[in-house]
Image (cartoon, rainbow, N blue to C red):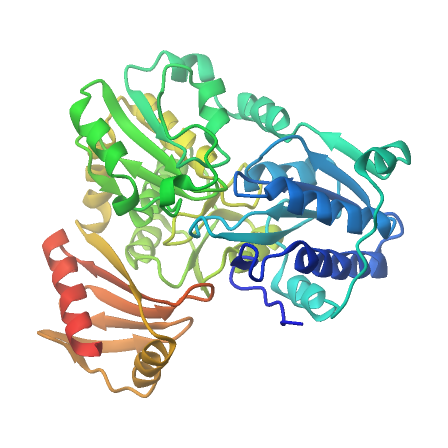
Length: 465
C-alpha cells in the first residue's frame, strides 16, 4: 500500500486515485489506535465540507472509529473547519476530523486532524497518528442507525452551534444596520450559509452547493475572485468584499474599488484594531512567509513577535500555551484572541466589518491607517506548475547559494526557516518554497508598490527558470 503522509495541513490526495474509502479507513484506524492509548472513552467530532463524496468519507471514518469503541459526534450536512474545531472544544471531545482539501483543486479531498484545544492537532500528535497507519484494515459493516442505537454515534448541528456562538461575539443588529454593505463570496465552500443567516442584506456570490467549484480551486486569491472584484467595483453601496476558501478557514478581502486586500494587510489591520482600538495585548505569531512589516508595527506597539515554519499547526501550538493576540499566515489563515486557536475566515471578516462600523471608515481608509504606521507596500505571489525535477533543481540551487541577485535586485541577506527568503536591497523581499501537496513552486514577492512587486516576480522567474 502507498504510504500516507500528512503535509502542512493534513493529508490530501486526488479522489479515487489515492483518496479512497480504503485509505480513509486506514487513517481512521490509526486515529482510533492512537486515541485509545491515552483515553478510556474517547469522543471524536467529524465533519465534511462541500467536496465530492464528503459524506461517504465522513461515514467511513465514523464506521471505523465506532467499530473501535470510539464515540463519534457526526455533523449534519456540510460544515466548515472552524465549526468542527469549535465543536471539539464546546463538546469537550478529544479529537476532531474534517474531511476537506481546503483550497486545493476540486479533484482533491483530504483529512484534517483537530485537537481538544479547538485548533489543529500538534505536529507531534499528527506524527504519532501517521506512524500508526496500517497497511491493511477491515472496514466494519455496521450501518449508522445501528451505531446510533448503540450510543456510539450521535448527530450534531455544528452550524447552528457556531452561528449561536457568533451572536455572543458580534452585534449583528448593529452590523445589519451598518451604512457599509458587504458582499460575500463563499467560493461554493462550507461557509456559504453563515453569512446568509447572520447578514441577510449581504450580496452573496457562489453560495450554493457545487462540488466541482465550477472547475476553480476554492482559494481566496485575486485570480479566483474576479467576479467579486467586479461586483465591488460596480456597486457603490458595497464597501467590503469578503471571500472564504473551501472549508472557510482562510480569508480574502476587497475594498470598495474592487482592489484585493491580501493577508499581509489583513494581519496588520487586525493587530492595529485589536491593540489600538480594543486595547488588547499578547504575542503576535506569524508564519515565515508573512511580511516583515508586522515586526515593524509590533516594535512600535511593544508587542513580541515569533516566526514559525509554514503550517498553522505550529502557530496553534503556541496559541494554546501562551498569551497570543494574533496568529497569521500569508495564505489567509488568521486566528485572533477571544476566539478558538484556529483560522477562521468568517470570524476574521466579521471583525474587520466591525472595525469599519466602529470607526466609520472604509477598508481603503483603514489600509491608509496602517500605512501611516508601517509604510506603503504591495505583495504578489506566483504559483509555478513545474516538473518535479525542475522544482527540485531550483530549490537545490537556492539552498546552495547560487542566487545572489534577481535582475537589478541584489540580495542582502537570506533566511531559511521554511523555504528560502531573500531580503533585497530595495527594502523588499522574495521567497521560494515548494508546495507540500501539489507539483508547485511558490514565488512570493513584496515591494514598495504593486509595479515593483510584479517586477521582482518577473526578475525571479527569468533568473531561476
